[in-house]
Amino acid sequence: MPNDSEPAGLLTLDRRRVLAGLGAGFCLPAPFVRAAPVGGAAFREDPFALGVASGDPDRSGFVIWTRLAPKPLEPGGGMPGKPVELSWIVTSDPEARIILRQGQAVARPEMAHAVHVEVDGLQPGREYFYRFESGGLRSPVGRARTLPEPGQEGTIRFVSAGCQRYEDGFFTAWRHIAARNPDFIVHYGDYIYEYKALRRGADRRVPVVREMPDLPGKCLTLADYRHRYALYKLDADLQAAHRAAPFLASFDDHEVENNWAGYTSENEGVSRAAFAQRRSAAFKAWYEHMPVRPAQRPKGPDILANRRLRFGDLLQVDILDTRQYRDPQPCGDGWKTCPEAKEARRTMLGRQQEAWLEAGWRGPPARWNLLAQQVPMMRFDRDPDPALVETHMDKWDGAEAARQRLFDAAGAARLGNLVVLSGDVHHNRAAELRRDFDDPASANLGVEFVATSISSAGDGEDRPATTPKLLAANPHLKFFNSQRGYVLHEVDAHRWQADYRVLDSVSRPDRPDMLRQRCVVEAGKPALHMA
Image (cartoon, rainbow, N blue to C red; front, top):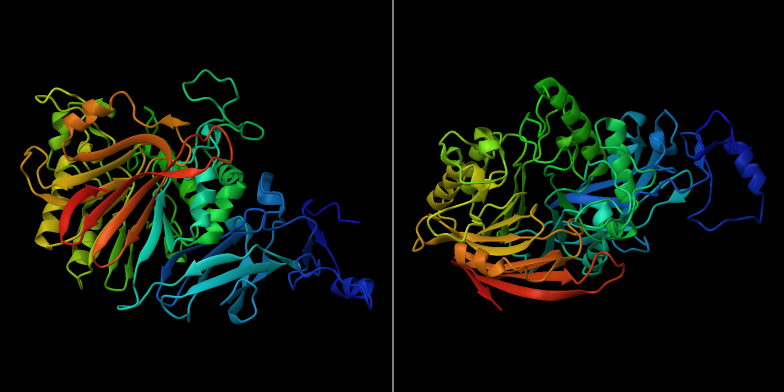
């Protein structure tokens, strides 16, 4: 019988008694043998209910992640308040016929029994597989890929996606992404939504498609955020995407609070100290549930989220943080015609991150330079009057001088092929980045691909009624669509192809995805071609 003092998901056993009880001629299938590890615990329920993930690859390895949680939605995930050992392997095939790397890790209660294992010593530009084991139970098998060396690149295939509100729809797009086995996935943020749960029939424009179990309140404490991540990670389609490819994970606003900026809360009257406490809880839970390296482990309310990856000489990826160091939104946020947005002092990245980005551009050149970030960089004017400009203050439009500094630095570095990825706005957009948006004849500096949401804002529509006015007000905007989905990118030395793939519905499960628009950029020619 289980010890009543142990959490329900665990059974403490004496190793000799287990072996004696099995006896000769008695065996269980390998994934379900409940032998106790050295740590002394065996599980009565699957400790890998939240799946596995990999991320942040380099030429010799990547990080692999899991969290032991046999009862994910209970406090502590159904785990004891003590460390538990687990093992891991990396193989050249999903059947684990040849083990290339293996080791032990310790899942500690202060980190929600999550582990971040940095695997190295592998070959560049190769596909690998991995899994974990604890208490005699094995995790699902995950797939990862190391970064290529110069000359190995060939064609890189990857996905950009994000914004997945649980209540707004099913995460079917992640299943389609997983089926494509991309080299990696850029998740631009809004992995969770921190809002109070809503019931079906709630008075809102977007119907509640599925309710969160137990209808939790909004996330404020570490326990709140841990519970929310666990709930999201139980989604089978999201788990499939994590198994399929390494994630390059970043956060936007809803991992903490809607439209937060630095130490400024969206809500009036929240002190810096109180918001720092909330940031600390949010960042800790984000780290515990993301396949990022230990270098990204937060220190209180601070976290190092910007980082750089290099795919041989073909592609340099700079992951940016547009939340932690930005100035508060000017003119009280929202859609505005706002003179404050032009102030020279305003920043989106902070001076230190700006300097880091510029220094990276002065290094050995890559064929393509990618900025993987959160909010749209393009000007997006919603006022059809050519004499007026009305933009949203939470985007780069709210820090025009910061955007111009970035453009000037890219020009000084003579970047021939600049591509920006973003999200946040629940629309698909493809645009050319003008050196000067006030000058219609200004040259293009690069292009931007804005990915719509996985589910946030519900089903959406193909071509909203405002589309013609938006295209007229923004001549650099070449494509606009408001359905759900993701962007599939294929990159080689000669061209960048971005396929906007959409679903006709996320309020119904199991819908197919379809190609809505193909965009092509030729190397050395920063202009969009609609294919």
